[in-house]
Length: 57
Image (cartoon, rainbow, N blue to C red; front, side):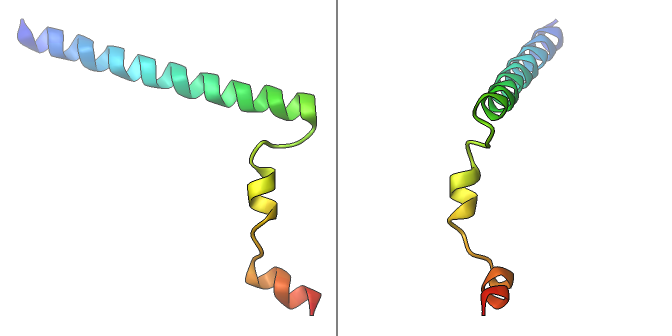
């Protein structure tokens, strides 16, 4: 019987994790559609990769 309780707790934990992940993904998708841009783009644009530096020379 304790095994079934542990199994239920594990399934509940995974369900909560997947729900939270889905909410974050849906929120990011809606934000991208509404603002026409990714919320993470400013962080990505501030990074210069070596290939970008070579192309600007």
